[in-house]
Length: 238
Ligand SMILES: C[S@@+](CC[C@H](N)C(=O)[O-])C[C@H]1O[C@@H](n2cnc3c(N)ncnc32)[C@H](O)[C@@H]1O
Image (tube, rainbow, N blue to C red):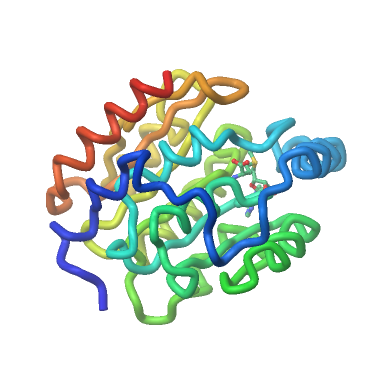
């Protein structure tokens, strides 16, 4: 059962002290092997992978801020080697409430081994329009590591439409970018009646990155405290 809107956003869980050092649903991190595997994947498909190294833990904490076990179903798009997946589990999102959507077969296979209790779908994120990962349960949040800036606008539109067709009224799409503004074009936001808010930026990533939260215009307000904690976290990591 998805909790009421005021409870979906979890200020307390965004405090760094609440982050567990180890999580029960994953094999231990392997930063060197991940960096190597990621670089190899980038060499094979630079446009789709669109980064030479996995995101940092600081970016993982920033993009998952405000999410916790009360968020309900969460879909992660483009998880790669699972930096954001790990951050979501550390924040208390339950493995059965998490679905990973990864287009690159080698990443998808590695994610299944690494997070055996989490469902991984090897498919294009644009297929969310026709494929409902949680059947009738509304999605509480989408966390996206997709390279939106290098995608055709039509594909970005399909991904956002598919996500928001299945999203709870107060749900949000969390997107990171290396660019100076929201990576989703204003025309696409306007067409889907969405608005983007910058959550914060971290310099502790190569390259530095910012996170945007995209929601329906006029969506029910969520816990303001989570935004305050997000801001202080991003200031701390900047
Ligand atoms: C910039 S990497 C981010 C990986 C990871 N989230 C991180 O931050 O380290 C982009 C990821 O999105 C995946 N991807 C790209 N296009 C996709 C699509 N259309 N559907 C699903 N995954 C996609 C890539 O394979 C890659 O894993």
